[in-house]
Length: 494
Image: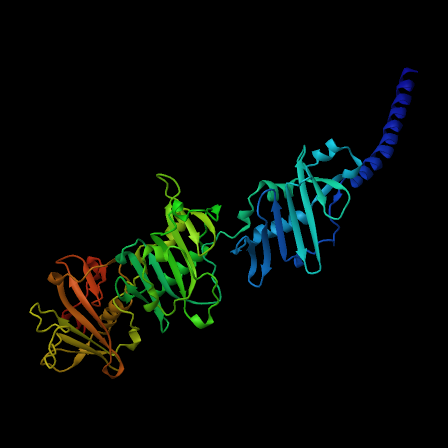
């Protein structure tokens, strides 16, 4: 009997559990579906058509973002490119809001109504698109990550997850802006001016003409096209660390009323440029001269000013992008991208001549008296080269004074051209050629005897080599560079 009683009790208990689940399970599922729902219907907000976002917070000027032809921009309180990822997050979070319960504020007592925090709301976010809009008033936060909100046009207030509050109420909408220091546009860059300080010698100006970049100041020399391209790419990637303040009363507090450092990018074609930011504070105050005379256009398509350090002993600095009414903080990474050493832009090769275009090469030894110096010789008294290499159909010939042309080593001739046209100096110095170490110069000729380049040489005894083009810039090579300046070195089978 005891065993039978236990079995009967077990069956009764099992039936009770099954009955409880059959009743309790569906009831809870139904309750969950009823308690949690989307604040907006699936097709109520056309995500891809939204072209305007407006955020109004208590005691703050509204901030407005609109979708323009080139992407999202902040339209008000002043124009500034927006960060598309941040804007998309605002849209997606708004459309995905979930509500668990709703209450009609008119049906509750004044104290409870005030507890909703909707009179007035902490912030109001409006999403607009052609032919429609939705505005959400954001109220007080509650427990368990919830908050109150009210969709304008509806009677009830809803308890929603606080994800939108985190962005629109607690967050800084200035961070919805793009932090890029330079946004490349459809207009090509034709000129660059870097100001490392207020002194004229602390300015570096580059200009592009006929497809080639040149440094115009503080010296006039060839620029490295790869370096310029790399600089513009690094500039397009550079970003500010943060937005410090908008529309300051005194720009000088941040060192931006007359900034010592700055970057200016100029349009290659002024007629085709569409520019809205071509007036940058500080230029007139700093007494700076415009580089327009040296550059192909005075139309500014990019500008960054750099002010004082953000704090005593800090490396970060305050900055301003073009004429935008906001101060940003620039970190060491951005500053390094903005202001590489001037030598970075110098073409480190002895010349930019294409080897295949060279038909002949001469070497003339330097005479300290000036009689044999190609740069100083009087008309009619041209110096006599120590040797001349001349290209033939199948190789090279060499000619020395008083001797007939004879075959030269093709390998040595090719090596010489590679050294003069392709070898990149590991170091560059902004200084004149040291006359005491000067030993001579190579001259490269093209078809028809046209002079293509003149490369001067200096050599430390058993030390470094330096070459220049009489442009105030030395390209310095190590001891192993070993330019052959003796005609015997080009003899066949040597």
